[in-house]
Length: 115
Image 1 (tube, rainbow, N blue to C red):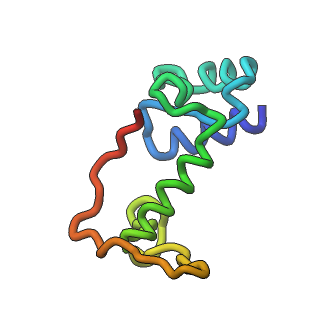
Image 2 (cartoon, rainbow, N blue to C red; image 1 turned 90 degrees about the vertical axis):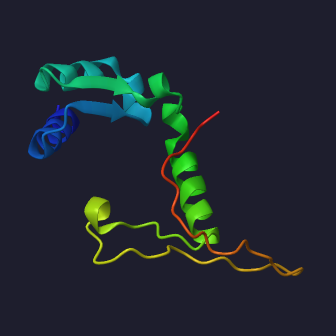
C-alpha cells in the first residue's frame, strides 16, 4: 500500500493522465490493482504493452544514456530532471586499441523506436 499510495500521490501532484509502470512491481497484481483504485480516471498499464519489457527498463535506460554520451548529447534536462543545466553524463574510456567516437550530433534525437 505504501508504494501504491506514494506513486498515486506523485501522479496526482503532476496532474498525469496516464501511468506507464515498469519493473518488478508490474508482476504484482495487488499493487497494480491498488494503483488503479487510487487513481480513478487515470490509465495504469505496464510498459510491456508499449513494447518495452518491464524487466528490461534499466538495460534500455543505460543503453540510451550511453548513446547520448557517445554522441556528445546531454543526458539531463532541467525540465525533466531538475538539473541546473543540460549536461553529458559519464565518460568513455578507450581500451588498449583506442576509441574512435562519432562526431557530436548536431540535433538531439526526438524519439526512440524499439524494434
